[in-house]
Length: 157
Image (cartoon, rainbow, N blue to C red; front, top):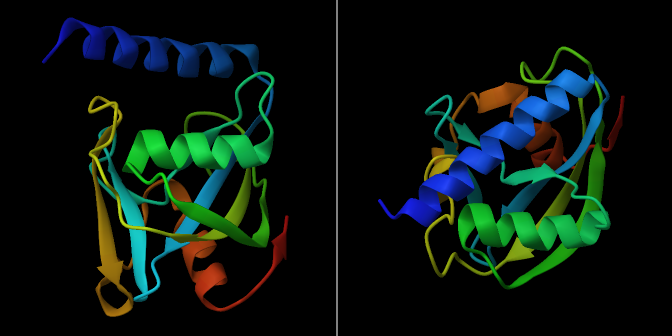
């Protein structure tokens, strides 16, 4: 593994710890991405080894839209997408074990990934699933987010 990859990965972890120490809610996005042939994008997280929706926290100076594009490129290698419907906002304080996360979930029509995730210390792989192949449970209590999107629900918590 290249030293620059390790440094970037360590920086990401330090940034996450700093957010927890500051004890303020963190705003992020999660994306329910679907290809035109009805395959659904998930990422396998390194911290839990489980599948999850791609997404992450909003960086200083970013819009939610910019965060969606950046996170899909970084975590899943997806660079061509069209943001769709707002699925909802999820703010239950106990949902994410790392910190109090307020997550804005959006649907997006995507093209398949064109490269692997950029930080292998955070994301192990990205994969497209047929609807019948989707895992029953997702990491970090993201299961309701996915299934609310699939059911066409809009959520505000």
